[in-house]
Image (cartoon, rainbow, N blue to C red; front, side, top):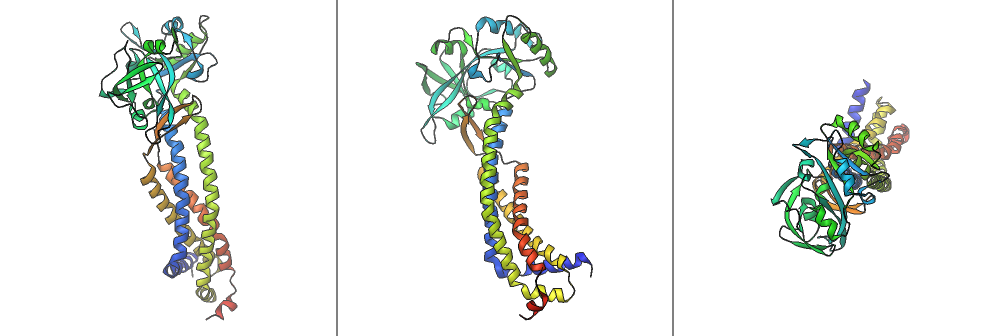
Length: 395
């Protein structure tokens, strides 16, 4: 009898006997599904955070900070330096206006809607060129702030996560009462966690004088970056570092993304041990209930390899079912779920949505199949080595 025919025949026998051990099979499926749910959910948090950070950058923008600064919180330079930066070649212009926005970055305490606990929410001082520099940002509710006043516009993500940010609301920060006059969206990026206000007014509210922390520049094209950077870093009047905006935000996401992924793999590994033991018990039960059938097949000429592969195939089937079920539950429960966490680079809150991607679902299914392989291997070997004579005596 051909080898594949033997495998199909024994595997079909395995499937027909599943109703006889439905309880133990369900335990294995549910156990594996639970591990996959946790695995995918935790990694979707890291994926969502990374997506929010990386989507904030554009290939035609660069970020200028003080030399040696690793983020905007540790950067700073005076107004005259920002004027020099705006003279650099490679900048896009609209008429005589360079599309480069000098920005100030502070943290304000606002309570979370979910818990009421205070959180560090970023407030960014902007200027009149900001919406042209950040061309993806759009006012979607209310109106744009009036420069020279205490008005702010809030990102959609910040509005969802923090109290007091509805249009028409007021918040207190830096000995100033700020009025929320609008909401903006920015493609779901980290910018939507921020509050935007007039940089000049923010300087006075926080007694910063004529100082800024960064200049965000929109370039003529991505190819203009080298020219723009070389001119600034070689200028003896300046001490600045220049980064592509995309690269800056990707760097900002590394620490937390690695931490979350490490925790996710660690939790999944620990839970996977329990799921593997459940699969082992399930498959041992399956082998014990089919002792006579397996012995009869062996006596009729079925080889040990077909028996071993058939048991592994059943373990893979149960694992695949558990993996698919876990992935489906994780997608329905967590994909798009809104939350916020702290960015360890700037110690500010970042609001983002969990992202259950096809790649994460594939990883979850792959992990489920690995658990099925480990759980079914020993029972499969036992079934293949089952003594024919002693098993037939049970008939």
